[in-house]
Length: 307
Image (cartoon, rainbow, N blue to C red; front, side):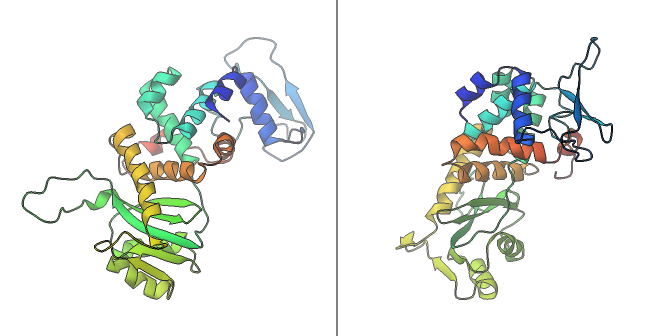
């Protein structure tokens, strides 16, 4: 669904609730979110004005508990109108290089803290699982800006900004922040996300050669970048292209990303990259994840420990 479609279709919270109800109960029969009873539901109407102005409140005739289309979702305790939620989801999904919290603040007419919290909750819904198969390229990159070389041939890279990238040829991308580019850190990440039956393409770094001797025996091909960047179908150009998009977003859109939240930014870019040919379906997929996912508390998001 395109941004212009969102602005035309979801002009009120009632229209947003209609859409959420259709998404949660596609057969038209409402089901209790507490006990699972289907059909035996009554609608509660508010005759007098009070502090609680919520509409579309339902009561289950089996367990007696009340619920709504937002119950059990991330929208339940949010004071932000659903129209702004839907607009924010569309903006994040359509921004190829990401959209900053300051930009969301200007578009939605909210304060910076609300926009920042909103963006991170949407990113939290952009997590993906599954194993990469077929031909998989793997490499690591560093998000720390380059430092000027003062007579030294090698620039030491800071370990805290390392991102390990894995991409299936013609398939999905997975970006994972890691503490360092050491073998004991890279190996379990590769095992978690790459199928043992896959063919692994990497650069000539000895770390990947040692790992492949234990996990991908006879299924590892390496390209020596000091001699060439591609020999036929042997290359890591696909993952390098994905790194380029990530860096343009981090440096150009966000300018600075905290290592604490880097994982969510990586999930966001991977999620969008994997759906670059499904732009119209991305809004619905993200909205479904938000209705099913766990709530990300602001206290957890701002805690000193990595969230």
